[in-house]
Image (cartoon, rainbow, N blue to C red; front, top):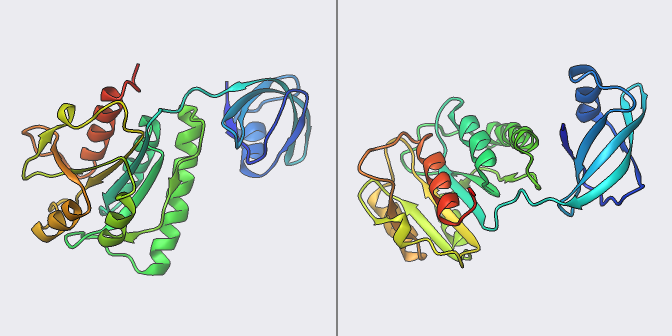
Length: 243
């Protein structure tokens, strides 16, 4: 069943008009027609089976035939703070992180980041990243569209993450095994992943001063684009969100 999002609340029997890129995808890419069904996930994380009633130009009118709460979301709100990598690697990190269950993604500028876009370029990238998150949420049938925040400093990220139940710093210099850190009563977890050159010692000290616990992903050194995905997968498993 093809999956789309709407920012309004829906209930059984309602009609809803799908426009823009979603309508174009339904009519041109999927070549759907009147009488076929799609799923709409609304702002309240409810999923609705909808019957296509009419297609007019660039608009698709549907009627909600059934509704139920979407149970696809993990019960832990995971925020990924990842040091900005070069090229298109951030796009891969964002796409896969959304599929794995991250609820929010924040690119961070650290002292060893090679990619250092100016504000105009960073804003353009953020818009691109949010679109990738939307597409990944549709593909993986998420109950929400995870937010991709704008590029931020490590100090600002550390302050923000201090409000989480648990902040984990994955550090190549060593740390505790995840199984000794994660508990099922953690409902909000912030995860920090460094760039290709790793975090500087002063950056580690900054994060630890804000309550971050250092953790390890094993004895192997993972690439900057691999580590976030390994971390999220492990956390989702340990919190029983891969069952």
